Amino acid sequence: MKDKPVILVVDDEPQNIELLEAYLVPQGYEIVKAANGEEALGKLSGEQIDLILLDVLMPGIDGFEVTRRVRQDNTHRLLPIILVTVLRDTEDRVKGIEAGCDDFISSPVDKIELLARVRSLLKVKAYNDLISNYQKELEAANKELEAFTYSVSHDLRAPLRAVDGFSRILLDKYAPQLPPDAQRYLSLVRSNTLQMGHLVDDLLAFSHLGRQAMIKDQVKPAALVREAWDLLRSEQDGRHVKLTVGNLPSCQGDRALLKQVFVNLLSNALKFTRKRNPAVIEVGCIRKDGENVFFVRDNGVGFDMRYVDKLFGVFQRLHRSEDYEGTGVGLAIVQRIVHRHGGRVWAEAELDKGATFFLTLGEKI
Image (cartoon, rainbow, N blue to C red; front, side, top):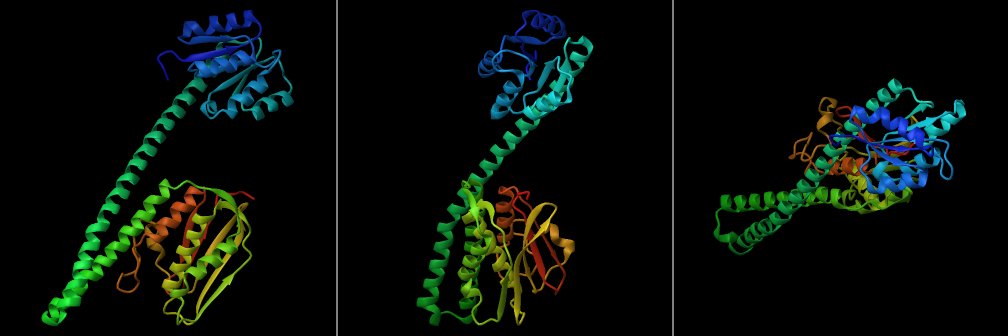
């Protein structure tokens, strides 16, 4: 907010504008005047306004309609609006609130009440402006971090390929001439290089999520589950796996991203049910608090709920890498996709009794 807050006063009666000006200017406010709704909307596009004092009953566009149009503009959707009105009916007040006004003041205007309401709303605007600036700074920092992460991850690929390639050549051409320990060390180099490559690929995928535009459409989750399951055929080979898919209602979302969610969750379930015969995996949906909650449940090894806060962190693992492969990025990707849809993701589990992952997509039913 500037040194002098700017108030747009809109009224078709010049004497009313003069009265409001007499009240406000001595208190350190700058006044911009408009005689009708059309002129007021024009002033908004050319002036930096901090608050609007708006008469309701005007010829042409009335105060209710001006308020609606202001709220439809993202630039001014949080701009404080006080409707000045002689109307006393509750119906008219409700109409103003539904249009998007922040407060009312009755005409003729009481000076003390006017100044109190103006100060209060300008204070709220100052807080909103501060939050908005912090949000913009945070978004800029996140974009910079994502770009840095992408660049570093991308640049790591070439040297990793070189290390793996030369290690493989040494093993292929010179293995008979190398002592067993040297062969084992080279094999470990290759194994760790491949693991590092998977980490880099997952980090790139995670970074890409923040840069990828979302294309929302009506999606049928059951179809996505079937497609995801087909992609994971190699993880099911030689195993007895029972998959149950319940009634999954349609939802709004990005098809490709939501498919990735089910790929990651089903892959996670397959991994941690590896020692079960049969492995039982269920995908379903329940209604809770007015929204659809999708879930993926398994009868695998589960985890200790004391460490659930670590579950969706990048590179966080709750099981030993010697027992279960992975990079610790898959669930972080799930969380990021769900958050981009405006939803939530969480998990419940018990050691050796399986785990259930829940997610919503921000849709109230």
